[in-house]
Image (cartoon, rainbow, N blue to C red):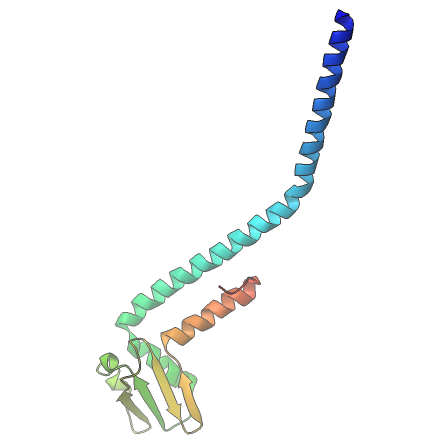
Length: 148
């Protein structure tokens, strides 16, 4: 009788061990898919953090150097004559860019950091908001992540 009790206990433990081994095998089989999900989330979070860092860096630089942003926009578009429209708060900072082919005007509807270049063929938004949106789109496209 003691032998039977030992055999029964042994059989129960063997069965419990087999169930645990199956659970471990199932978990191990699901691990690659779970890791892919975690990796995608980490990559997306890294992209968002990098984008936020760039926004802060560009925002700080732009607050002090709107003239560079406007000069770059003018350099990127050689069509002349043009009108450069900026927020009233930036008018004094970019006055040096004015010339016979470049007119600068304050546009009350534009916020700080925004700039529009009006040419004979249309209006080009070239402010920080547009550049940051382009940068965000590049991050999203390059990483193949969903756009938040």
